[in-house]
Image (cartoon, rainbow, N blue to C red; front, side, top):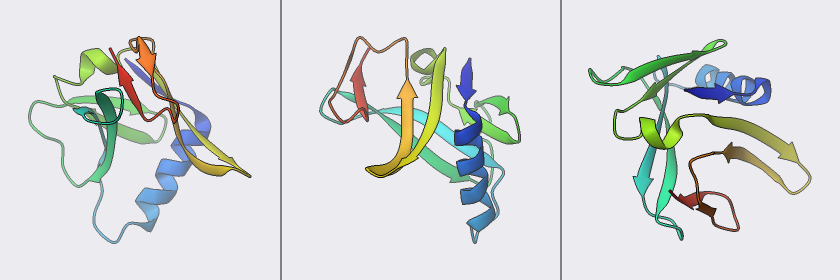
Length: 107
């Protein structure tokens, strides 16, 4: 369903280890917004919601709600860290159009 690159896994593990609150995993969702209509939402969470799909990506557990799952099917999440900044990059085969910054898309 979803792939986290090794770089993304390491970044998420760092965020989890640095959290002051208990964390069981990462909730990844697609929500309305952004300049292309849909955008990604990533949050560290203490608990899985009852209806969430649970995806294990190396040492990271990712929770995806049923409405977001079709939008995220086949998506690869990477973490880039360079001179121009750092952040997560999504390669989504379900996106028909992405904005220039890459944080929102149209399905």
